[in-house]
Image 1 (cartoon, protein in one colour):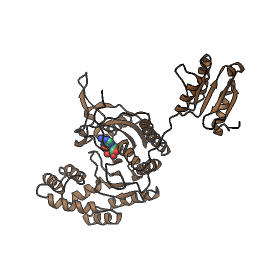
Image 2 (cartoon, rainbow, N blue to C red; image 1 turned 180 degrees about the horizontal axis):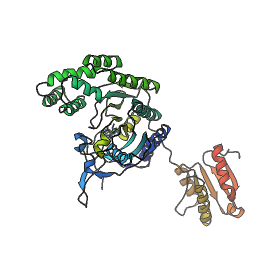
Image 3 (cartoon, rainbow, N blue to C red; image 1 turned 45 degrees about the vertical axis):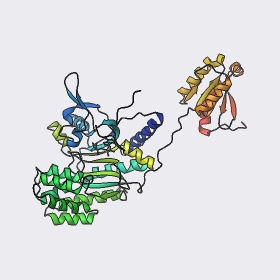
Image 4 (cartoon, rainbow, N blue to C red; image 1 turned 90 degrees about the vertical axis):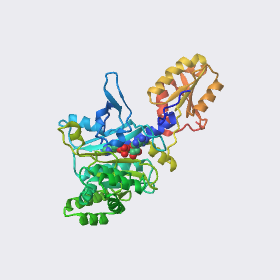
Length: 441
Ligand code: HAM
């Protein structure tokens, strides 16, 4: 017996329907925010990710050499492909560019709860606009999707931070530009690792200052509201006005979108990906346990890095399907699907051919229709119809055939009507709008 590879999933119909429900909600809400769907290849040149995504993702790439000796990788995320695509069309695309994608991604991670080696993401990105309004628009879209899936403010939180605020603080603390990535990486990992480990990493990045930096970083991470943040920014340096204003604008916009109860300032969020430059955020289940449901932020220099000549501000986020479906399941919010046909044909063997042509008519009219593929008597066919969960049986015997009619039986109420075969579709449409055949009909 073959099994799926570790970290990969099968999607039998019920799981597939649940995944599709997530897709459908994302599509509907993304359209409500006027985002357009796009797609990109699953296999990309390895170089697209090297240096652009950051060390963590590079260590997790599924990569190999193809038969043309090209170094290629299965996409671990969508952002570099999107940046490449937009940079190539930058001059012809009307701005702002608001695009979304639903697709599969691959990371060679240790399979565990909420983490697989193949997973789906909904990505939404807004390019060509540097105003904080775009960041707020995306956070609002993220909240709207999670709300539409049934989650409330008791269920999830968005933790909002800003890389440029961190850079401002690190500058004030005398951390050199060179040491910055390692310090940001240590901050990013500080919730998952022991303080001793973090101190060691900080000490390696900025020799002999590990302990002192750890104390400062802890203090900054304690900040949970705008007033304290503004005070700390003011305390740190003269050049603070722009930064405080940017935060004030963001908090006002969050208020305007009506999502204030979901969002909290939390500078412990730094994000593992190397390309972020401004506001960054992650969505978590409200208890704060478990991996992130979604994450994103502003990445103003990625297009320039990839294209060399196109400089375009950008921001976006992605929701992952695995942590999300675990979260929905734990709250009893997994939708249940009835995957039954609308109609089931029951016909005598001699009438089967005519029956199948009527099935075609019903199917073309949009009714999901099934029938027994075996030779079977009426009794067995009725049993099969019952098992299928169909609402109506279409019954075609010798008598109906002679009179050019067909019987429609409501399998819930047992009511039935006889109609001319030529008016089958209009009768089905009528029933569809009324909802049932009365048992006394
Ligand atoms: P990310 O934080 O790496 O961001 O991934 C976003 C979400 O994808 C995570 O919050 C998680 O739900 C899901 N995810 C990531 N890795 C796995 C995994 N191994 N198994 C299951 N789920 C996973 C990005 O990918 C950025 N490119 C998002 C973005 C879009 N930034 C700007 N635009």
